Image 1 (tube, rainbow, N blue to C red):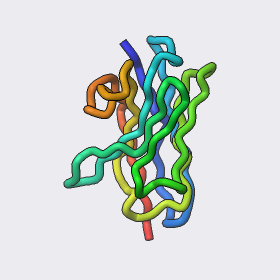
Image 2: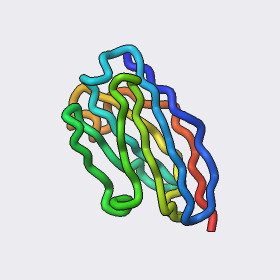
Image 3: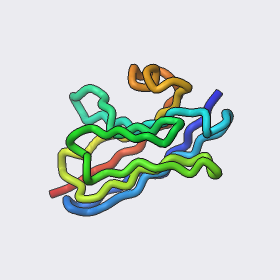
Image 4: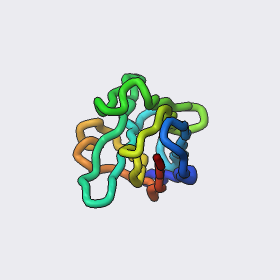
Length: 121
């Protein structure tokens, strides 16, 4: 079993920055495909960014150039640096892990508890 514990969410004004973290345990971290997802009220959950076991990253188009996903394998921790935040980035953010990226993108695997990120105008 993989356990994922996310840092607290936060509130920020538009244009501000937040950094999220997600600590994984229960499985060799270097073998995990990791990702950040979000869900806004009334909307489907969507992929924000993913990072594969080889370190390759992928981003939702609307966050490219503003968000950066990274990880510290030694600490077993995933990060999401969010800059130039917009009101439309407001959502519940979740980290997730799976052994296969395809499975992760389909919504399977292991999920953190989710924390709220609120961006005000």
